[in-house]
Length: 285
Image (cartoon, rainbow, N blue to C red; front, side):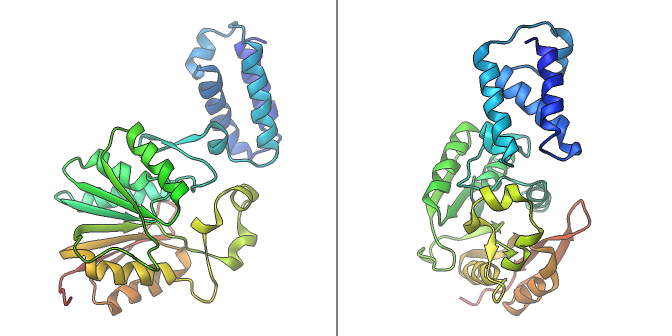
């Protein structure tokens, strides 16, 4: 099979399994990762003959797509803030909304010296901050040892210096000696009752522990993070969190109740309530 023929074949096959809006991007990913050619190369070298090994790998990829397996897990990486991030079913696939959270921090915190990323998962937030703010000492934690292993690999892959450590934020085991200018988190925030609204590829393959919270206590992580930050933020330090769009006003009130000032709610590119910031101006610890 020639390169151009493979592109046409992939366009037809991928369209059987995914939304029409995703076909081109998935075909481009497969051509780049499995064949080593981008769209320009396909047009320049359409008659390039492909090996049987490449074609066999492509067929295996298509079988996984047919089962709604995410393309990011198939090729074992994705892009986040211009960086390549390794992913597996042990970590969430980074979303565009989280890139907006990173951008907000970088815009607002140009002189931050230290930062902690809670529930780091793949490490994408911590690594993007470290890459774009090299003067910042970045730390990150997660309850999952498997997630931390991926995060550590991602930091090395992207040549960033991030200190990772295990911690359950709902039962933190760290002392009060560490102080940070910024604490950020994209914690689990999807209610159990929202499962019926989610895509099969998310429900079947992305880790539940990083997604869901109980319906009766949907703000459990925000409460834990806000309390932890009271003990671990520098004076005038700030907390940034990604949120479920349903609970914007409740999370604003939670931070205000804990004594945070200048509490702000920001929408994402789709106009949904997605990020909250609060600043700790008065320390009482």
